[in-house]
Length: 377
Image (cartoon, rainbow, N blue to C red; front, side, top):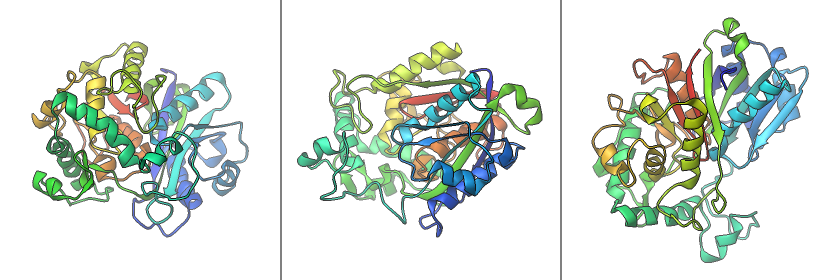
């Protein structure tokens, strides 16, 4: 991956009612990323997004003014493939299929179709439909069954999860782009929020539903001298273990771990020659707060069952051993299916983040089943 850089990043504001459609949001974020890279729409010849994105590639091509496309692709599902989009774009660059790829994600998930709400009577594809007859009809319910085993195995409580949420909201409170800017919470606030799935998830353990768009440009490292602020992709991996799913790990022998993230960690450390001690800051996809615990353990930042103590000891705070979700995460900044988490990883390496950590040389982005390590050129 040493031959690929993230050349530009862009985003819209994050809101609960954007007042414009997803194509316009994607176009605004895309143009911002292209300009940030010091490029023009004529330089872009590839597009990558998720299978769940509602924007048509040819419509976006016209909206952005791209003269010609040579490559497009989509990673399966949604947020767990956020880092995989960079892997796909890097492959296109490496093979010569494209010279500059725009990655984007845009939607109105709060003011429009709300993903987190049950939809009675609607036919849905597997794996969502498989468990509907048991009443498991929302992401919170699906994930909670998996998290419950982790809690049982290691004696973790919802209050432990709340300690992460407090940190995320503290980081969001000093990030002007975050929806919860200047709105930190206490552990008491977390514990007073209503149950969504008792005894696992409270309201403040759940990510936001947001309107917005995010984009980035990936190109070859040979173009780095002409790019204002390139960030090198040191590693990009994707891993799915048989028996896992987007929303749960019900059918694996070890229900208290995160097999996909564990495999990502192994592959990432092998690919980069790095390890947990080499990482300065981590951005972890957390549509629900317990995922941070499982990912910290999967990557070896702490032992199995030790994440609660690791967080309680201040390790993930801005001045800690491993600052996590310095933008506020999906709970505090916005939920753009994890793509804004990639952007924060880039900003930390550039030195331009709202909550900048000093001396960042290696930035981890964990998108659950995919991951990146970013570093300076």
